Image 1 (cartoon, rainbow, N blue to C red):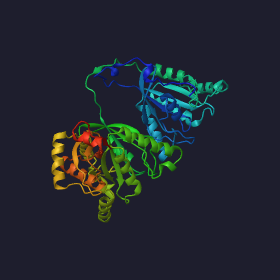
Image 2: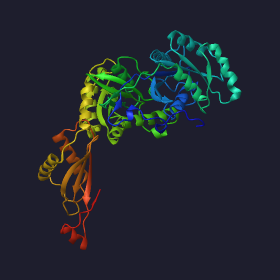
Image 3: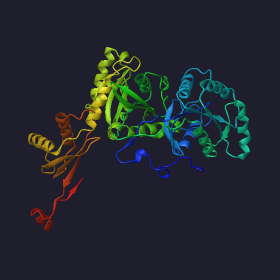
Image 4: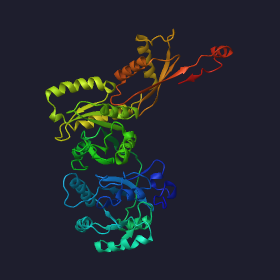
Length: 482
């Protein structure tokens, strides 16, 4: 980038959140909504402000569709930057829903960053957006984008005719003029309240909504939020950017993350769909547990199983949500249960919720299932009870003989949680079937509902010759390898 407009951690004075044992209280953070007609460079400008590629960008209109918030800062002032889809007046269908999301972003914003393509000049769509902005009574900062050099600045000054204030020439592509633009945004923001200190850290649990395209993830988020928080359409792949939403369920607050559908062969995707899928995987990494949705009106597919496997491989908690239960008939239910038994046997430990995002049926049960998953994900078993359990299990079912020798399990310890990770110290290799047996017995004895378990081995290497003699006298500790 030719100009950096993002202050890194090293460029600012330590704030209250940097004090040991303390965190900043939840002071209201101002909101800046980025709006404009399609393909004027809103998402590219958002990435420029953030200093990294977060928003999906492609050289076609209509890539962004939802309100997507990002944490941003400029000159030490924090604010929430909300990217929106292209605003088209008098639109219908999917475009109308995208425009409605942009209007909602304006209604909840403290400042509106109105982006116009200076090289195209004023259009009827720009003027239609301007009329709505005037009625909103929000401060407006006008960004005249795609002014890549001094020879284009005259195009920016022509935007005075919009009568929403001074146009700031900027190039989202090259960073030109972006500092002046952000200074204007800061001047328009409300005064910052004094920051307070609280001594108890914490925050809501993060829950990712995952699934293949068009299984109802966005519909479920809207149902949970009680509003049309994200765009929903029958066309698969409507969601492109992960959308975070604070939602209270059964007295508990969660951050739900709506994501783009994970497709079967994402490495073969191109453009916006590829980056959307990659952002979904990033959203999974920052979540604590995942709710994987299935469309019960259709047979389970390889893509469904792939999503489940990705959650397990990422070591996140898991809840299985079977959506569209209101349209299920008896015949389909019979075959669905058989598909679940056959194709999801690997995750039989995951809590299951049968729900309908459209009608709201049983969505309240998600809270119990999520709490079960989070509890299992964080469970720790002390070494004493764990080894007492191990002796009983091994005495009843010893490890199978391998290569003419029967390996011994000397002891077991839990190395970590989130997810639970156990280490077996052995004298030989344990077959995979026996390790799966131990995992099943662990779950039977200590629950671990809703979480994967990692079970690894550390095998004691044998000593030969003089080394073996020393080891037998206790003068040398045994060597181990994983």
